[in-house]
Image 1 (cartoon, rainbow, N blue to C red):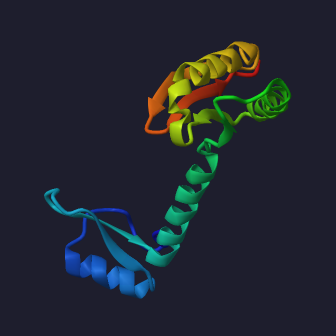
Image 2: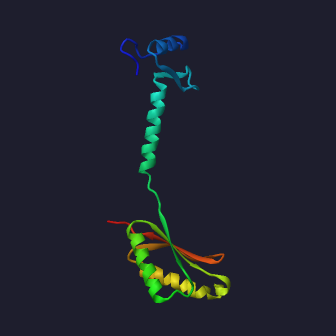
Image 3: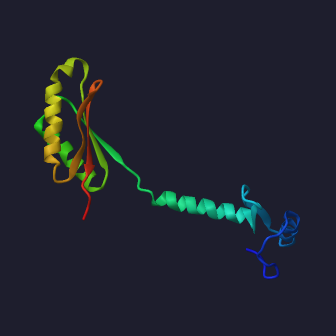
Length: 153
């Protein structure tokens, strides 16, 4: 943003400072390690504003990952399973990742195999809508499985 009356070129720091003051702009050091150091005459506040604006635009373009959870018990009956499966389908179709888990309370941890069978059945039923990202894995009192949505064509 150099005015019409100033030529682009190499100036000593004092001269560059005088030109910047004359134009009521700021002298900003671009690369201090260069020999001679490279400076630019710009409106610094406007520069910062545009930089923040660019960063914000990039941040808005970034994809946000939404994770929806569905909780089962080890002895979930058929109707509840179907009801939760419908919700899982809706979540995957909307593009959200699905975290399905079986929560074992108290002594129900002895039904680990039933919980795993339940999650694998869910994965098989949701095969058309998503792909298994992580197979069922026991973490404490929870058996967790992640399902990612299939890409839309």
